[in-house]
Image (cartoon, rainbow, N blue to C red; front, side, top):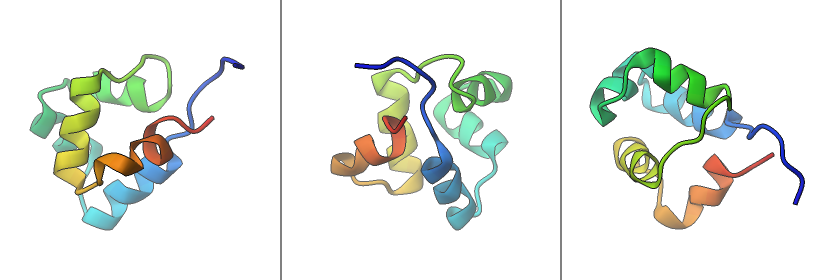
Length: 72
């Protein structure tokens, strides 16, 4: 499978829909805002725990994780 950055545009759209800033999301899941920003720029991977917590905060059903986190 080809390597490359993930596209988090759907995840960023969900943040906007919910009216949550990246800084607020970072605080809610226990990340430094700059660390979250690095992950959203696909320069570092999200852990499984982080993905689950983001889904909880944003109301993303677990079966939709691939559409939000694993799109290239």
